[in-house]
Length: 422
Ligand SMILES: [Zn+2]
Image (tube, rainbow, N blue to C red; front, top):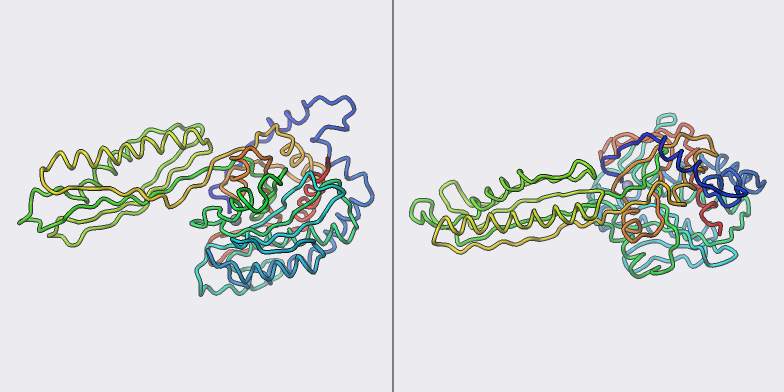
């Protein structure tokens, strides 16, 4: 899911869209959604999406009751595969890492639009994932993030098929693995590195609830840093260099790092541990550190200063005491690339234009989603919310209010059709 979304005022983007000069208006990506609405078959597809929304909500609840813990998405993936097959997609398959893939061929293979949502949740095995309904409100872990996205993917496929929409380009539907936490975007990485390498022209991820458009992919780098030494008795072996003391020096240095406010760049020592007892010089001490930025350069610069701080802490502790050789291990436990689709990029103009054509509010967000990977590669990408209203993402009491959630399905549908144009 998007972590820490931030909403921006839209005036700038709207102006950019309006400023795009076109002779006839026929090539203006900002008005593509509006122009598509003039086609009767597109209107029929949108009507089918609205009419089919109760089934979409059923799919959302049903998929959500199939556990999909991190690295264990297979059962939910199998269910999505069956839905892809029933909906008539071609080449339906599960790739080596567990992504579910199915194609809806257009008149040509290109442009190829990937339209996706993620299978995995943050909830461990054994979590009670039953979904309860109370009027329009569905409650259950993962019901919004990202069972909603998966349901919108299915809703879009069905609406396209019911209205017999033909697109110039191909739409490849994907349910990805490994979006959350330590999954570290492994599903979407595999798509771009191997499975569909060189074959993706445009990328959409449907993630979570609401009607926002995420175009800034906040990157992160996470480490587990472990200092080690011989350890010994606190009194008898006094004078040995200490991993805990080295860790303390490192944390003090990290705490003093200066970072830019814009692009927002952050760091946090989230967990620490180690040592044996109060009367022992520790033989190990560790910390887990999270660093983030919307800017790849700023993140890389912070990473270098962080590593230098750790090395300096080791050297200082070593220099303070003559005995006991210290070492440090820097294990990367998370690495999400930063990237952004500029607000004036054609795919963003299309996405904003589609929302406006459907008379939906437009709000631009930043976050950490599957979209980070294509954004970091310079491939046009946006992450859209799936409609409805969500609460408590990543909590056991997560809920989804389906009032007018069909608007989210319609928006995803019109965006998919628009991006499959030449
Ligand atoms: Zn998500």
